[in-house]
Amino acid sequence: MSSKPYKLLIVDDEPDILEFIEYNLYKEGYDVRKAVNGKEALKLIEEEKPHLILLDVMMPDMDGFEVCRKVRSNSKYDDILIAFLTAKREDLAQISGLDAGADDYISKPIKPKLLMSRIAALVRRLPNEADTLIDFGEIVINKEEFTVISNGKELVLARKEFELLLLLASKPGKVFTREEIYKKIWGSDLIVGVRTIDVHIRKVREKIGSKYITTIKGIGYKFDI
Image (cartoon, rainbow, N blue to C red; front, side):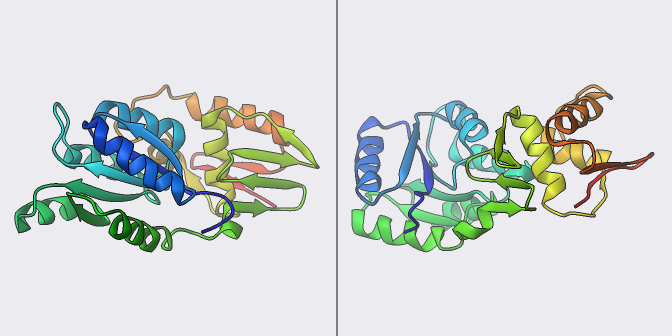
């Protein structure tokens, strides 16, 4: 495992199962978060952006399939892995889970060695540590730690400011349309004010300098190096 632990979110409405899985994951050095229902899980996903979600299927109010579909509908979570945990073994349940966007399917009762093996196989799909940094010399963006270093000094950016900068900097020279930025940063189902992007761009420019982000009139923005 990398020296920087992967962040895992366990979602299950059974406290005993949460505790059991958490204990085994901690022993392997993973950074663990827990949620007891779908609503709490979605909140933690927004705040923490885990690398991998272990998601129970049968939960009250919002089942695992619905949580998975909500995560997969938001493109900023495209790199999050999802594995379902369920006592249901029918082929139909597995097909439904995979159709909802799951990467794997782990049946209960959970066997620790098998669970750790499946998780290890999943996290091998994640980018390596070098891929967490975008280094332009004067500016270094750390995707994992949500930090920006400019000329050796750490800048303080709000969450949406950081996500906007990261999006533009991920593909220098590419023009991102306003519609594309709205969808990737705020989500296609969220209505925000027409000036929202402009305000956030202005704040980012104030912090990193105006030379990096170019306005393409009538279209959108791009990051220049």
